[in-house]
Length: 277
Image (cartoon, rainbow, N blue to C red; front, side):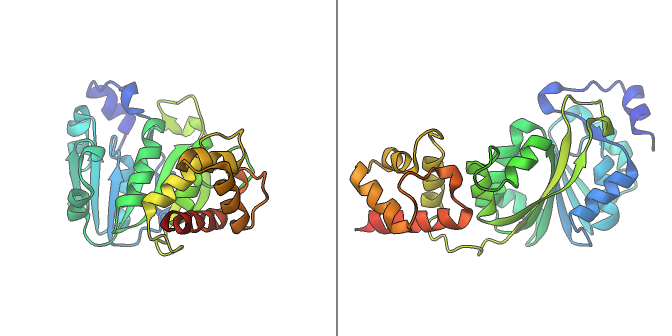
């Protein structure tokens, strides 16, 4: 199926607001399905676009639930997916659906696959990382710099709050790079495919809200020491913050970006203990 020709003959106009850049190479689309380890089961696709990845996913999955925000693509999808009875298209903004609504559509175990614009990456990732009970993995096509941030290691420029938040509940890997020329229309940046396989019992986080607050505080002032960030973030005195840093076994002048995810868990638990006294 010639997707480019279909888009042209239908008079479709790309909407920059939605970050619409479609992949059309069928071999690559199959590779992304393999990256996501789709082998039966249910897949939630976010951003169906013209349906190119949706078609590929439907060859590997038992069921595909595909969200698409742009109503102007509804007629296109009716054509590209007309021979795919295992695909259910939802025209709407997935971020406006409650997680319970999404999981009723997808069932008790599903994988998320998405080719998403930059502005949605952080909110989408954190939503599924923090709210979903049934998503087993995310496979995301995102800007290359974003992928590198999600999989970053401590003490690097890409390492930040979203890195720690995701890696605390998932194993994250950048699995392939995608030059911009592979997209239609061609965007201004290169992309990459990143996978996050959820392990929600990876660490004992009894209060995810407190863990989030700890991570946000640690990265709130990157030029400041962790001691100063924790004192400001929790309203501790410098002396009390220093005692917490010492109890964790960290250097007094360390910074948040130097801590591994495991060390953030130690910090969170120490703060939790301090707050309970």
